[in-house]
Image (cartoon, rainbow, N blue to C red; front, side, top):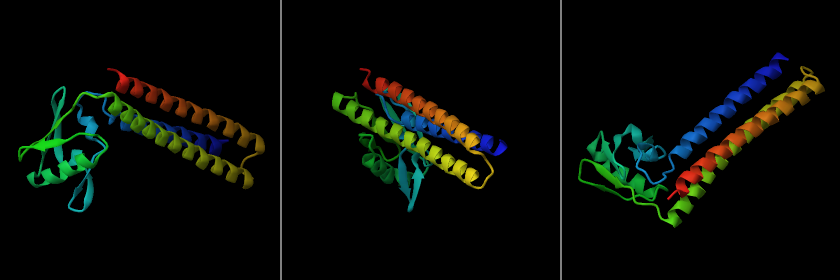
Length: 187
């Protein structure tokens, strides 16, 4: 049935996007090296509006253990520092009036465990998003059946296909998480 195929294709695309978004979020969890991506989750209160840090400054990694943040507007240095201090990164910024510097310290065992917990939380959010997509599509399938637009057999086949999609997406998230955990715990 065309409607059921459309629903399953929509679910496949949405689950794929959820997995990609989770992979991107996991990339923002640091693993000991300086990377501008570490600051992707930082939101700065810019004149009362929550704005991504990357929209307010140039972020670069001139050395393996150093990030520099050069704001486009010099008056934002204090709010950028405040946003970094309040984040879950555990980094302490310093500035010279023009540039904010973030020294990336070696990770100790306790900090590595905290970062693994952060990564697990991000992966769980991804799993929840995938399950929510599954729930929404299951609801749509039941509505089709109740409206008489799909038979019980078609609905059952679609549910089995949807469950396979869900399982594959969650397995992909678990693989991403295992890789990130190994990266964080690598000394």
